[in-house]
Length: 318
Image 1 (cartoon, rainbow, N blue to C red):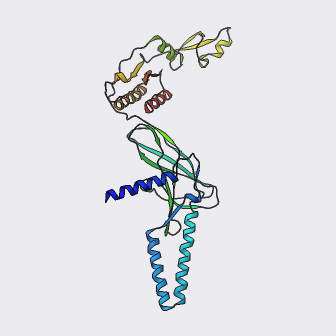
Image 2: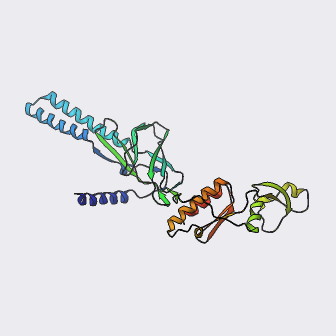
């Protein structure tokens, strides 16, 4: 039985992917992308109408015919409202903060609509997950839904396929649409391993670069050397003389820590990257200046949030 169900699920997934390829934001749900089917209550209601129709025909009762057709008209009108409840709804933005592999990735999906219609009883869920709680969107309003996605590997993670559905107005019909935002989020390597940082040695160039960055105790000025960044020039001090002056700062954090795959001692590549990610976090928390070597590229020496994010990004796409 499982072998029969699996090809059916694969065929359904291929059909959905072909009909809903990844698209850039914002995404608007069109009429051609809305599907509608009766719910279980709708099927029971249809069976009830059939029984009423047979009874009215058998007894030639005009009131029974009128009641049956009136209820059928209500069902048809509810089907129209269920379809129109999704048409024109727009996915405005999808945002998620990078996480380490193994941690849940939270996608924040913002929906809005510019029409005067109030969208009622909407639910958004990721493919294969249970739908979240229902919500309404008034005219000109927006609503943010949080979808949790479990990460297992590092790299670029695409936003999962989203299902927007509604049972409005009376629950006889279920209208839904598939949306695939073309949004990717970085997943860093799993942060695992030991916290013992490798012993590093400071070279003169690295020490000079760190002193020039202006992160530590101010020492004084020196003359401009070709190749120095204009961001390090003290323009006020230079205006009082005929030469450009560069600010210098003292480094109070000791030697630069060099983080290299060769220092991890692991044979598996993913294990080495996980250890490097752990070292980047530990070195950043300790306030040390550190440099990262990965894929024959070097980042730093430097410190601070921007350097930490740059190192983790390099590890994610290594």
